[in-house]
Length: 430
Image 1 (cartoon, rainbow, N blue to C red):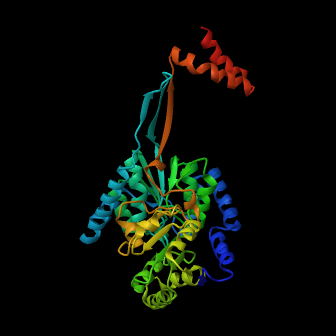
Image 2: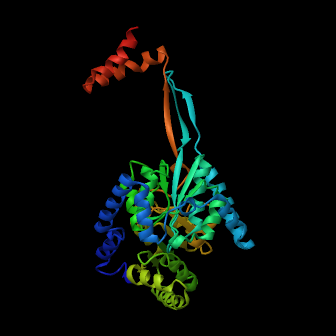
Image 3: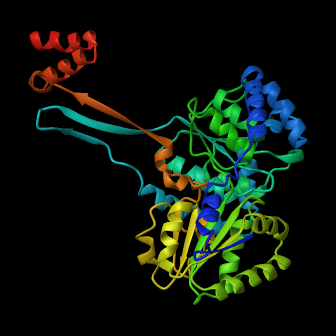
């Protein structure tokens, strides 16, 4: 864990190194994934059988070995304790309401030249959702991926999820029932992503693949982008907390650990204007780690990637936050709106002392699938638009062609494309 002060002589160099540090997959992962994808493309189901036995100790034989049926998902949902079932239903309701407001409007109008212009928004035909089944087995992620797709109008939703030794996560199956998933396949890893993209004898290909996964899953999505659409290349989780000394240090410590417990490569950063408060938070982190069920993972993350930064004034945190472009940014300060106005790069912002990032992971409504690895500088979180595409249309009558056609022909000739020009000029002469 690193301590930085904005007044240190080496602060700029140290901060730059932190911003530029990569915690994503390495060349070995990329090479392995390339081999896996090639084999899935070439041999289809046979590759899936081999990899699933090798990595998940699960034999793909009968249909039940390959797929989880709808009745099993319904039973998993019905068997949930009432409070857990109600929590999932509340999360689904709020996620759906937030994403329904994202549906874009079609356009259809005639401009001053008499040209009819517009665009139609249509859903993709099929979407594949990757749901982890190992360390990270989260029903909340299934809801966050599936519900926007359903809202967009996607007709076929396909889940791939590893089932080690044949065991499926009951909460994930319950969430699949609630979200209305059409197919659930018992496969995981880069090979599952390849199956969704290429298709196999059993699995029909999809148009878009979303969902979190390990380094191999992320690399598979990166390599397959272009053959299919993807949500983003996701890396390890990260949180930036900007906090003043009026906070309870226990709460801020818990917020930092809420991301550290995801993965040893996750990153938690605190920026504060009080060195004494930073020390208090660090002490509370040490105490909480001793009793945290996920303490081993969280400790590795905190010790390897945790950072505490002390500034003179909290407004100095804003340009630092923009350079970090963090996945999650908490503003635990007196006036969070004032700081938020200056933050241009963040996956999602959490306003005030009573808004822990964890609420956003489950029931707030906005999507928790967010850009990591400084990608919030150019990317957005998952939305309905990730499952839709826009088709523009143009309509001209003779007067509209007379108005704009000659200029198009001039440009076509200037670009050395006479057939382009002729297709316009012939119409202008008739």
